[in-house]
Image (cartoon, rainbow, N blue to C red; front, side, top):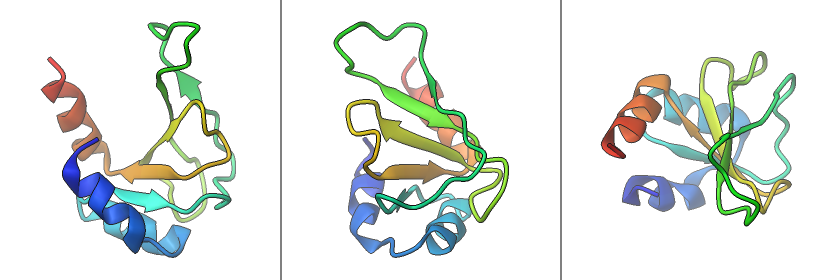
Length: 96
């Protein structure tokens, strides 16, 4: 995870606040237990049975609409990190 994403995890208090920050291009943590209505989480078809992967979702409503949510597949009820679509594309492009 980029340093900015881990550093921002402790600064997020609410879904609307996290969404505002993520839209500015800085990944932000969505607190554990925060609701993402209408979300369908997707896991990569390249993931293995070891569950060492992340799941992504694009919230269709609520304060996080238009952002990319990412969570640890092993910690489903845990927090998610929100990315602006461009920041998520930049991250994926950096993986090569």
